[in-house]
Image (cartoon, rainbow, N blue to C red):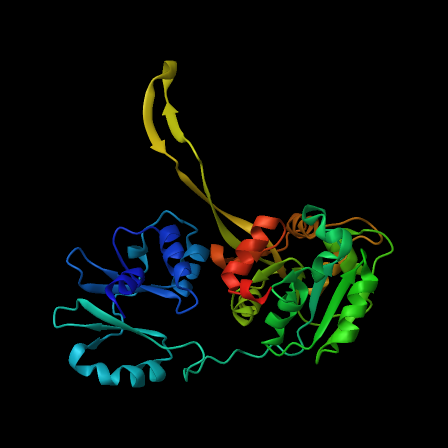
Amino acid sequence: MDKERIDGFVCSLPLKVVDAMARIDAHASECSLIFIVDDENHLIGCVTDGDIRRWILKAGDLSASVEDFMKRDPIFVKENERFKAREIMLARSITALPIVDDEKIIKDIIILERNGNISKSKKSLKGIPVVIMAGGKGTRLYPYTKILPKPLIPIGATPIVERIIDCYVDYGIDKYFMTVNYKKGMLRSYFNDLDPDYEIVFVEEDKPLGTGGSIKLIEEKFDCPLFVTNCDALIRADYADIYDYHVKNNNDITMVSALKNITVPYGVINSGENGELISMEEKPKLSYFINTGMYVINPETIDLIPDDTMFHMTHLVEKVMANGGKVGTYPISEDSFLDMGEFEEMKRMEQKLNIISEK
C-alpha cells in the first residue's frame, strides 16, 4: 500500500467522533476502522465503526474525542514478520492489519478482500418478517413517478425495492409483506415476472393510510419482532446486529438513525450584550442523527395503530412513548444510509454503489 493510501487509514489525536465516522466512511468498502497514531506517528490505538456505535449509544456525544474509547492494544505485526499477516488476520477475523517497524511506526497496511477467506458469515434471520411500505406516490421524484411507482425506479439496472429486499435476503429472510397503493398493478406484475426465490404478500390499500396505517391491514399475526422499512432507502449495516440490539435492550421499537452532517455556508457570529462580537466561526458543521425509515417493532405495537386511518410510523413511535413503552435508536454512519427521495440523492446512491456503468 502506498503512503497516500496508508494516510487514509491513519489519524492522529485530537479526533472527534463525528470526524472519525467520516474517515471510516471514506474507505468502508475495504474495512471499517482507522488506526490512531501519536504526534511522532507511533501506533497507539484503533477505532472501529462498532466502537463508535457503542460510544454513541452510551454517551451520545459526537464532539467527544475517540481517545475516550479507542482500543489501546491494536493488533500489528513487525516488518520482519509480514509473512504471518494473513494467518493472523484469518485467525482473528480482521480485515486490516498494520505492518510496523521497531518504533511502531506504520509502514504498510494489509487489507484482505471482503470476498476473501475471512469468515464473515451473516447470522441467519430466517423466519423474521419484513414489511416494506411501498404505497406512496413519490411526488419528490416527478416526472419519474408519473410513469413508474417509486419502488420500481431503477438504481443502475435494478429497482430500488429489489435492492432493498436483496439486503434482507442476504440474512436468509424469505417472506416479505409489501403495502401497496399507487400503481400497485405494476409492482405485482414486476415481481410475478421476476419469479424470485422469496415470497411477497401484497397488502393493498384502498386509500392512503400512511407508513404506519397500512401495517394494520396485514392479516397475518406476528409472534416475533419484525422489520418495517421504507421503499426508497438502502441501509448498509449489520441487520442481525440491529435485530439483536432491539431484543437485548427490550425495546418496543428500535429506529435506525443515520448521522447527517450539514455545513452552514456562511461565517457564523456569536454576540453578547449591545451587539458586542464574542466569536466567529467560518462555515461550521452541524451534526444530527436522522430517521432512516427503518425500524424493528414488537408485534404488540401494531395494536396501537388505528383502523382505516392515516397514521405514520412516527405517530406510532410517539404513541408507544406516550404509553410508557421503550423506543431505542440504532446509529449508523452517514454513508451507510443511501436515500433516493430526491434526484441528487439518487445520483449519490449510484456513486456509492458503483453502479453508474450499469445504465
